[in-house]
Amino acid sequence: MAVSIFFNIVDAKNKSSTVEIEFPAATSAALLAALVPAVGALINPLVTGGLKSAGFKVEVDLSGTWGIGTLLLSDVQEKAEFAFRGANNFLKRLNLPTFDEDLFLPNSQFVDTADTAVAAFIDMMTDGITVSSTLVQPTDVRGDDLETLVTARENWGKRRRV
Image 1 (tube, one colour):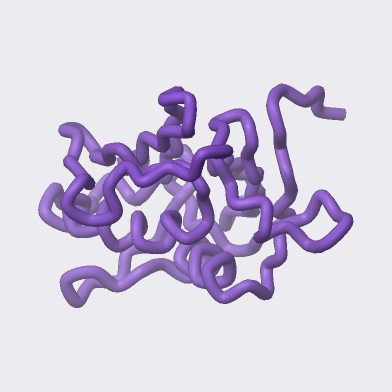
Image 2 (cartoon, rainbow, N blue to C red; image 1 turned 45 degrees about the horizontal axis):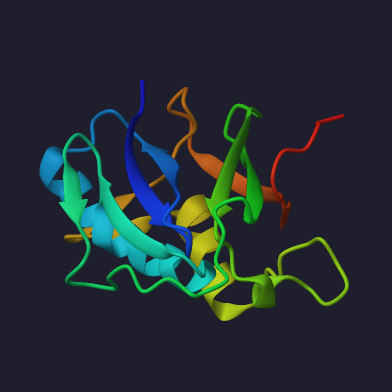
């Protein structure tokens, strides 16, 4: 079973939403603590809301890093959904609340995956991230490595899946 890190993102109305990313169960607490700011640095440029806190078992205060500097129009209902395919072909969906609208392709519902900040986040999700000289690979809830991005698109509010 995978362990996870999480980020609480707050919008201009002080509503919050949580993003959770799984990692292998063997990931140490020290490595998980190091992953929080490293992955946070990749999520922060993608959202207009503020990274309020993060953690894995115990929350980590991020006020000394990016703070809660939300944009006036940020809204936790305005999300980008990233869907990744794992090693055993299962789908992992991840929603980033308060996603920056400027990171969508013009006149489209799709995220601009060529954008530098977006590409860095996708690379971390599919190729892993090196923290404390250790490569750590995000997984799905089954513990399978995430391998490819299937889609990245807007997911504003509630939407029925077909």
